[in-house]
Every structure is written in C-alpha cells, then in structure tokens.
Length: 291
Image (cartoon, rainbow, N blue to C red; front, side, top):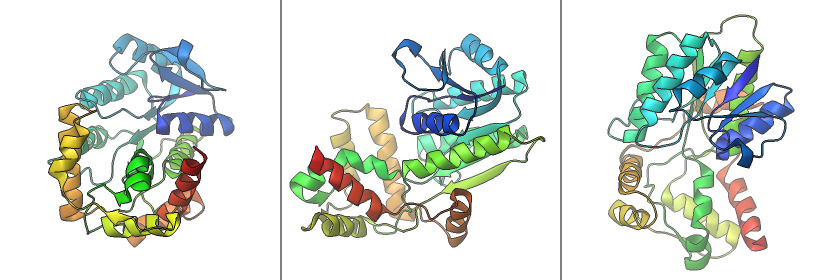
C-alpha cells in the first residue's frame, strides 16, 4: 500500500514527497493538475481536499496519510473531511501538519483552525503524529529587497522571541514519522512533536544576524503590525493579512519560544541539531548574491 501526501506541490509537501521516495516508499501525491506536476518517483493522483469522490478513491489505496492543507478560509472543512474519509477507509497511520501554539493562540484563525483538527484527532483516538512547527525561516526569503535594498529587517516579531525553524527540518521530521508509522507492524499511539530551531530570535537579534552575515548595518523595523497588515493587503486577501497580523500581535505579546525539552526532542528525531537561523541567513545571502 501507499503513503498519500496532500499539499504535495508546496514548499513542505514537495520535500516530503522527495524524502519518502528516497526512503523507498510507495508515494501517491494528491494534485489538482497532475499533468503539470513534476514529482519524480511518485504516483500523482488527481484531486483536492474538497473533492470527496477523489479523496475516497485516493484513500482506498493508501495505508498512511500525510495531511497538509494550506491557510484558506475553508481549511478546517478540508482537514475534517480528509480525516473522516481516512477513518472511513480504515487508514490507521496519519501525520498531520499543525502549528506550534495552536492550543494557545486562540484568537488567531489559522492557529485555532488547526487546533480544531487536533481536537478531532484526539476525540476519535486517531493514530496520528501531530507536527507543530514554529515560524518558518523561509518566510523571510520574501524580504530580500527590504533587507538587502533598504537595510531593514521588517517582520514585526517583537522582543520576546520565536524559535524559527527551517522547512527542510520540518520535511525531514515528517518523512521520519511517516515511514515509522507506515512500517510499524502495529497501531502506534498519538504523539505531538514541536518542530523548532535552536535559538530564540527577536526582531532585534534577527536584524543583528543579518548585519553580521551581510557585513553592514541592518536595523529592526519595529513592532507596527498595523503597517504590516496594510502592506500585506497590497498583494494578499484582507482576511489573510488580518489573520497574520493577529499572529504577529501574539508573537509580540507571548512569543513562541522552544523549551529545552522541545530542542532535545527535535534533535533526537532529526539525529542532529536543528538548523540555526544564522546558517539559513548565510545560505540566503549567497543565493541573493547569485541572483
């Protein structure tokens, strides 16, 4: 039987597919347009999370499900339909990509949406690993022109701190958990893993890393989430800009820092230390220079 990967063409999903193929798994990748999808080694199946018939068909040939769905207005509906169909199909190996702080950031729509999905997993005792990643380092790749051109780190993440995580580490943890569950002879218990980086980063300390890496002063742009929301609305839907603004408000109020236990757990799962933001910034700066 196969591992069905949803969100297979995105930043995390494509890496998960590649890792599973490298690990010798039979991978089925769900995609809306298979003819435009390039995922070597995987069987690409047509469908999406709101297409009940396509999901039923895809899950009939799967023993394991990687459930990743994007931040959309109907995110919760997508995820709950997928999990109910997985139960219906008898799938007893699941890995769900949630977000760290889902149970605490109750006013942030996409955090609480993911926590609702986690509650279904718990209530129905689904045999799942819930992955809760921190803020993605790679989100900052979109800041090239502001950091490099204007000398400002503009994300208003505040002064308490986040334990930002590299997407390659997220994908590696997902692959390890999917293969562990797929290859287990028995039904494994539920588990939650916080996926974190090794450092607690504030707006000022992140700007300082960029200063070091680029060899010139990079300032922190400050904590104005009103301005961030308005700027984001120039190219993203208003609901998404407001959702992310609420997330940043909570970063400023509460932070999203890893504990020592989180770091030890993720180091054990990865078999190595999680990637640091400084290493990410060095690689990003080199790519920017090439570009």
